[in-house]
Image (cartoon, rainbow, N blue to C red; front, side, top):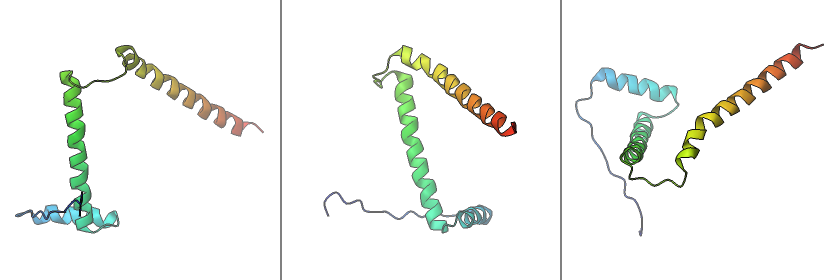
Length: 100
C-alpha cells in the first residue's frame, strides 16, 4: 500500500438539531447523502485554505510569479475588451433576429 491515503473518521458533537436539519435538506436538494454533502463541504474548505495561503504569500511578496507588473496591470483591460466584444456579439445577434 505504498502512497495510499488512509481516510480518517471525524465526529462532531453537540450539533444543534436545526443546523443538522438545514444541512440534511441541502444535501437532499443536491441529491446527496448528508455524509457526502458534509465531505464536500470539508474538502471545499480545505481547498479555500490553500487559496488563503497563496494570497498571503503574494501579499508578503514571497511568491514568485513569472509575469511582470505590467502584465498584471493589463488584466483589467483584457477583461474590459472581452466583455465589450461579448456585448457587441449579443447586440448583433439580437439585431439580426429582429430583421425580417
